[in-house]
Image 1 (cartoon, one colour):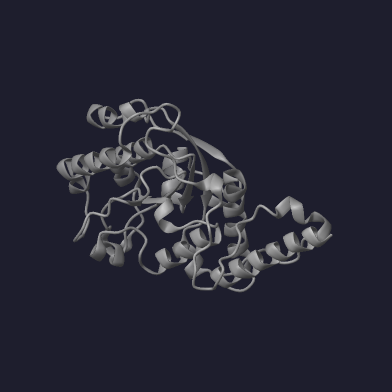
Image 2 (cartoon, one colour; image 1 turned 30 degrees about the vertical axis):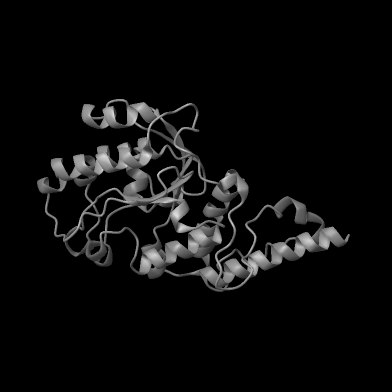
Length: 281
């Protein structure tokens, strides 16, 4: 009984920690866990030792080595650098209207199990050359921490690598032109899971025109196309990236949450993230 109470206490502490990160009542209200049911949810990420310390990552979420992924060989970090060089050389953004200071290629662990894909850089991202560092990025950081992970242990990218004028939503054509480089990034990293943030990235990876309300809350699958441009396919082929299949969980973009920060919307996003946490073990 003492062990059971300890487990239940750990769940409550994690609940309180996550609530603090996302804002009060982010987690769905009215779904309390009875002590007898604690073992079923005891695998939730444990809270940090102190409020200022990041939570420990469960052992099953540890990053994989470049050579330890289903027999793949090669260097994902070097592949990502080469993909960036090809992007800068090809400059697909030159074919549409854009205003930018820096290319925002992506950042994080080259061997991450989990990848987040947004739509396009904003003003702060354009200044720094880093994805998700503005207000939406700060909320994404809290989402990642609440999952029991650290930002440097996942990989974060966008469909577009340059800022659209006035932060406009990427068009279908803009997404199409930039898509091969995102696909190559996925092929180099070979994540097990992708969380798509918002409709542009979700519709691109799932080849769908459905609304987010119909797409979120359930798993989908994406496979890196075999018909990639030859120069990109050549980079990721040694890693086994061409044709790599990954499970996709769509959810709302953090910027949408900031605009409509309701209990219902926060509950939906946390439910989506919990499905990912559960699958990651």
